[in-house]
Structure formats: structure tokens, C-alpha cells
Amino acid sequence: MLHSTEGQLIALDWGTTSARVYLLGADGTVLDRRSEPWGILQVAERGQATSVSLQASFEQCLESLCGDWLAQYPHVPLLACGMVGSKQGWAEAAYTQTPADLHSSEMELRTVELANGRVLHIIPGIIDKKALPDVIRGEETQILGALHMQGAIDPDVPAEPRLMLLPGTHSKWVTLSGAIVQRFSTTMTGETFALLSKHSILAKLMEPNPEISWIAFKRGVEIARSQHGQAGIMMTAFSARTLVLTGQLEPIDILDYLSGLMIGSEIRGVFDSWTGDLPQSITICGNENLSARYKAALQIFGIANIHVLNDTASAGMWKVAHNTGLLSGQPV
Image (cartoon, rainbow, N blue to C red):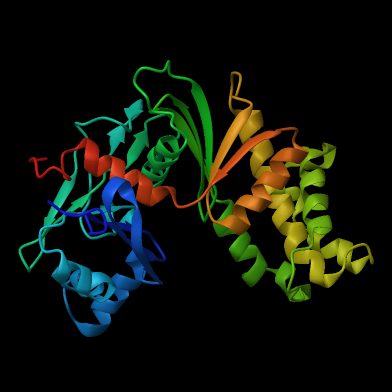
């Protein structure tokens, strides 16, 4: 039996651009954590550059990330979530269709045998087979962690409708009933913002600002929410240039103004396109800086009941490991 201060699970949140690894102890306590910019794309490029297989490249990165943990805890299970389970990742984990019960003990984990005899388990993503299909990988685990942290998965408590927002490169808006994912939508706000702010005509006038200009950010959100914003971001984005040319916006404020325009347009688009009554309480799971922007924008849209949670992926992986029997040594 492992003591409470000993590792009981090695959990990996392995995405497109980064890899985060956690050593979890009793009750999912984070004993240690590490992060490297070794997303699945970088791992593939590294393998090509060194002429090794994709499997070998992932194993090398895993060893670099937490080889000492693997040696210290030879019998502790390994569990991963995120794009590591995609077609472009280490091994593809099948999608679960909506409605998807995140708390199910029958979750189908994909297993990968490692050269050292260990087994890596990968959490499946979720697919929503609507007219325009949508998928998530990794966010389902963050959501489960958030529900656990909020005490919202008690089977004796009636299931309540919930709305969760996971901002990032591809932001996810998810509605749940209890721990069951009912529907979700993806917006490419983060990726589009990066493209516009680095590679477009708008970037030519931008000047760096060491601090967030909240005035400029909120101005962008207000425009997205106004009549001007009805036409969408493709009609308002160019104002990030013309307002500077006419002396109405400072070059150091362009980035935050554009951020407000895009996040505001995202929120408006989701609220306008989703039918039915949305819960008036929203939980945001994301990094501190990005979550602060979304919280400020949502408040402008009249949403007051906003909860912000961090580090939900590790909590979610602990719950998956517990629910599927990995922690007790039972077969999955």
C-alpha cells in the first residue's frame, strides 16, 4: 500500500503545443508537476529530425518528462488525456458520442504498450454528430475535474444543467446535465487571433504593451455586442487598423482591442446561435490570464454568476483513474 505522500498516478495532459505531467498522490493531491513545449506536433517533428518512429519519439519525450518518476514508482499507472489520443498523436482513442457520461465506469481507455513493459492509458474524446460535427479531446477531462472540484457529481443530488467554457486555441462551450455532456461548440478564436495579430495587416501598426489595456479590451467587447457587431468579426476586425489611422486608438492598444473584438464576437455568436435557455451560471476552466479576459467580457454581456477554476485536468484524470479501476489495480 502506498503512503499518502507517495505517487499513486502519473497523469499527462498532452496537447497540440505542450505537455504537462503530474505526479498525483492520495485523493489526487498534486505532489509534483512539470511542463514542456513538447506538443504532439513537436514530438512528430523531433522524431522526423532524428529518424526514429513516432512511438519511439513519444517514449523519449515521456522519459525526459518524468523518467525519474517512472523509475521511482514502477507499479503506478500512467494516464493521459488530450491530443495525444488523436490521429496525429501517439495512438488514437475512439470518440464517445454525445450524450456522454463523464463519470461512467465503462469509459473505453486506449492502451499503449511501452518498450519498458509499462502501459499508458489514454482517455477518449467526445464527438457531437450534429449537422456540423464537433469534437473535443482533453477538455472532457478538464470538465470532469471541474465538476469534481465543485462537488457536482454526487449521484444522490439531482442533475442540474450547467454551462462550461474552456477558452484556448480552440475554445469549447459545453452544456451538461449533471456529469453528462449534452452538446458543445468549438470556436477558433485563439488561433484566429494569433494569425491576425502576427501575420495580418493589423499587425503592422501594433506596438508592444507590457500591461493589459482593459479600457481597449472592453471597448472591443462593447463594439462586438453593439449593432456594429451584428455583422460579425470579419466586418469589425479592420477597425483595429482604421481607428489608429484616424487617431482614435493608440498602437499599443491594438492587441487588446482586437482581443476584445474577437472574444466579444465569440460570446455573441454562441449566445445567438444556441437555442433554448442557457444557464445563467458559467464555469470557466482555463489559464488565469485568458480566463480573466473571458470573465470581463461575459460580465459586459450581463452574466454575473461566473466561476473560474484552474488545474482541472489533473483532478479529472484522477477521477477517471478512480472510476475505471486503474487505482485499485483492477483490469480496465
